[in-house]
Image 1 (tube, rainbow, N blue to C red):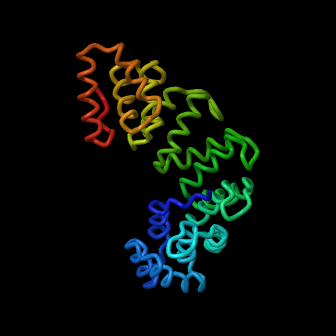
Image 2 (image 1 turned 135 degrees about the vertical axis):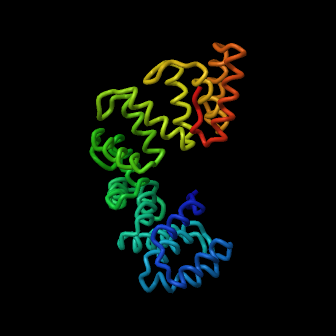
Image 3 (image 1 turned 90 degrees about the horizontal axis):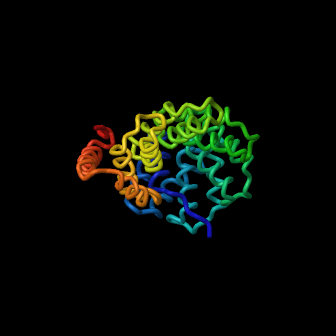
Length: 271
């Protein structure tokens, strides 16, 4: 089964990042947000046919999700390419994703890498992270940890949590860079403070082992509990294992820190 696009995220990026401000775009986007997909298509399709890149990307999104029109991934890819050729960054990212999974186009990781690179060169953090992942895995490009690390860093420096997590993992593993668990923990923390569950769990593990940070079972429990609350599969069992090493006073302190941490959007997680 062909998966639809995640329109709730993508459409906002499509519109807010590169909207032309044209009246038809505004009107069509308003209808889209209100669920009037047929009306939105009526406003956007003429603009797309006239060459407006944002309208083309939005029309492609609607075809890809079957909104106001029958689901048609080939048409979605056609419209996305027309927008991507005009350097519409989010369209380039979506087109790369389509090539990665063979949606509306023949699966081609090399082509996906090309489109990720075009968006990455324009500064898109998601594309930079995806391109870095392709280099680390050797998918569509020649495997190169150093190049992957460089792309992760560019995205991480923009505050993109998944890239910060990946950069932390590279430092911990010594992949493409000298192993440095302190630096790794620092990047995990930045991602954890943005709510990235995998980073929260890994940071908890580093506190548990005293790897890159001073060993602290309470903070290990804190971050693992937070990861568990957000659905991390391994965290539920691990938090119980950590709890066995804590006193009742430690458990109480951990609970207090967790509540404070959540209230402060994960930036108050300290003893």
